[in-house]
Length: 475
Image: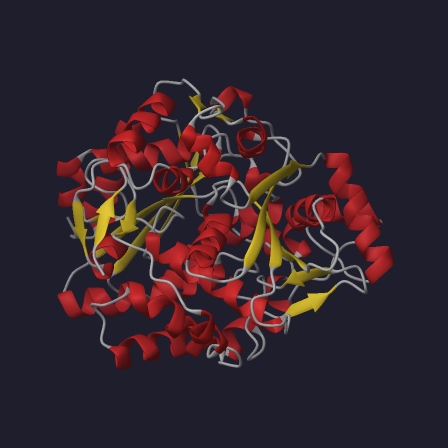
């Protein structure tokens, strides 16, 4: 399988190449030349597979440059009961007789769904870098959970350094402690004076400097990394088969969405032939995606208009993975995609309503809803009272919006995004008690912090990266 850029169609090589490179040289994202599909009979053959074997079946068509035995070994080393709490890896739990289900994705090392892909990236990076005798310096941006998931996945990886940007003061106390408490030689936390979109834009600006990127071997683990999207598609298959539906019967999925990577993975699974009926995009007060799927206008919010909410990992005004979706909506027309994204870059909305492309959007299976602080408090409280299940505020957004789009007789799978312990203040406000937290994170907020606060300035960021790598003799 070869990969191309969404903005030019330029060839980007095979899986290992796009794994290490992050953004394409033209600023676009990597997409496979085509999306392989499973026939109904082939889908049925996947039922009952262990999670590592299911991951192999789903991911293998997109990974042609890693030998079968090696890829199977990487996946078996990734998806273990020790790392994820049980051999089931991603358990599916019904919420009573409501027709709603929780797909538990937050049992990994950092207590967030990002572990499902990031643990694989850690294994894959180590494998590819060893084969190529290379190093990589990961530059990432996080609104809360990507950072800790990436850092936990890359701990002890001799050929990898992680430079993780986060919005200063805009994550939960637990999230900050989880990231900034790491004092590891290959982990560098940088708190940017701004919002997540500022962090994301800095990553893109650094990647746009081809000379700097090449000199310092800059790579990415954000949801712009194709390997993450691919790994996330697996748990849609896992959830579908766990429902034990008749062959071909549909299931719907509600996905808390900020950067669009998690729900795009569901669209990838749907495109591969999985009987996904509808993909429900659940937004918080930062409702850029909700606005698009209800009006046909994609209007990026400037940093000053990104609200600080109680589901902070979704406080995003520009969804980077949305470019991949627009590329497919455009029929893989890279020129059209580049034009749309240029409009985004210039602060103008992308207007699809009334065009043939809007017809494609309406036929793609998406719907959208939004939630407020009061909504998520009420949802956390109601789910706790009715089903004896405590959920985090982002998952509450997904449950609330999923309920609004339930169809009679069609299961609605709500993707859990994090354990409630990561957002204690909001959960306590909702139910009047603190959620349980794993013993290893007891009193995590009391530990020392290791983090550099930095202005929103790309030159300052590049100087910091260069200085740290020069100190280590790794330029």
